[in-house]
Amino acid sequence: MAMLTVRNLPDDVHRALRVQAALHGHSTEAEVREILASAVKPEARVRVGDALAALGRKIGLTNEDLEIFNQVRDKTPAEPLRFE
Image (cartoon, rainbow, N blue to C red; front, top):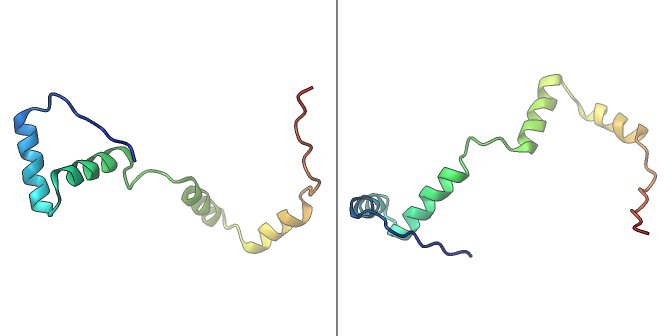
C-alpha cells in the first residue's frame, strides 16, 4: 500500500483532524484516509456497469433481446495482430 507524507500542515488543521477522528472513533491517520477516499472516489460517481444497466432498463431491453444479439453476432475468432 502507498504511503503519503503531508508537509506544512497548519496546526489548526491537524487539531481539527484529531478532533474529527476522535468523534468518529478513528485514529487521525484512519480519518485522513477516509477523507481522501471520499474526496477522490465519491459515492455519487457514475459506474459504467450501473449506467449501462440503467440504460437497458430505460429502453426496455429484455433477456430475449440479448439472446437475439447472441444468435446473430459474428462468432469468428479475431485474428491476432501481426507486427512484421
